[in-house]
Amino acid sequence: MTRKAYNEQGIFNRLVQDTARRWAKTGLLTPEQAESVRQAFPTDFYEPHLFVKVALFLFTCFAVSGVSGVVFLFVSQGASGGSHSWEWRLLLGCMLCGVGTFVLLETLITSNHLYRSGVDNALLYCGLGYAGATLLSFYSLALPNFVDPEILLGRGVLWLYLLPLLVLVVLAAIRYADPVLGAVSFFLYLGIVVTLLLPSALGKALLPFGLMLACALAYQVVQWLTRRPDYLYYRTCVRTVKVLALACFYLAGNYLVVREVNALLLGLPNSVQISFAPLFYLFTVAIPLLYLYLGLRRADRIFLHTGLLALAFSLFTYRFYRSVLPPEWALTLGGAVLIVVAGWAMRYLRPARHGLTAEPADSPGLSILNLESVVMSHVAANTMQAPEPGFQFGGGSSGGGGAEGKY
Image (cartoon, rainbow, N blue to C red):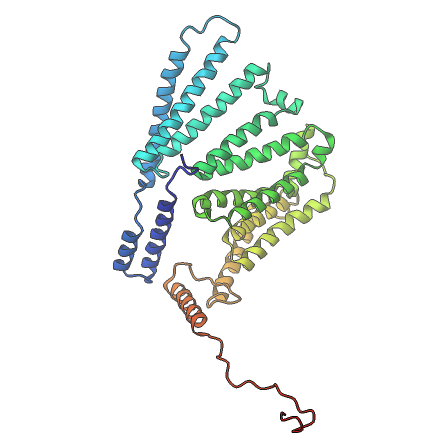
């Protein structure tokens, strides 16, 4: 069995076909050329329409639930006897359903060439759900009252359940490269950090900084993954984690979030002023501006969109504690200002200035311009050759001119 569930070459061919289809829409390729590309890079994945995917997903979930009910009914027969008889049968039923779901998933991917068709997504999530339930049932048998999250958190051992679950989800994400699994892995990782910090008073005080550090580490790991040769296989999964890392890094330092969560942890009816408030004010203002700067500097849409959303939430944070206008007036004036700024930016960036443009990425003019730039740079790099060596000056000596037969 290979490490990856889906055909990696098929995913690469699928991306090539999407690029050729986009280029055909912008006029860079003729329909005949796009068809030639499609035939040269074939893919046999089954990818139905979005509505069909949703229908298949729901139908598969219902089918798995029905079959699981039969399995649990069969396993629960004769559930009388010892004090943990029912728990053991629940554990056995979850194991059987989880193993059966994953076997069916692997069989369908191999035989029917499924690729995010709704069926494989539903089987994957159901299989992981049964695996998590199996782990929970095992801990319920091993430790009394272990299933109560508050008791686990109070004892500081909730991470003992989250860590094996994180390992399980990460292994599934490595094999199936599913973006939902990437998001679940990231939140489990943050959950472990929170459960390690919350039991102590110092950990509660450092919780925002610990979460920001954890998000920064997750972002660095994601950046390292983008340099791997098999990045295309995990592209959507990596991008999902990158967006979540940037968003959670901002939220962990946002003044509103820190203040309200602090009141929730202390059991206060109303939030009060927090320690290091000026520092969190600075984070609330500076992080969105930093995201916008990096998005414009690197031409990175993830940074740009995250920065815009973070800036909007920062304005809401200020409005939440400092109300200077009625909501209807604030929304009207804010919308008017944004429309004026957007209109000015679109006019200013046509034509392109400072490496930025307001032209759509798939506009014919921009695509042709990019293609011409690529072709010219390629031709220039191939035609620029080092000059051949000709007459070389230098050499000889003049000491005692002519006396020794040389100059």
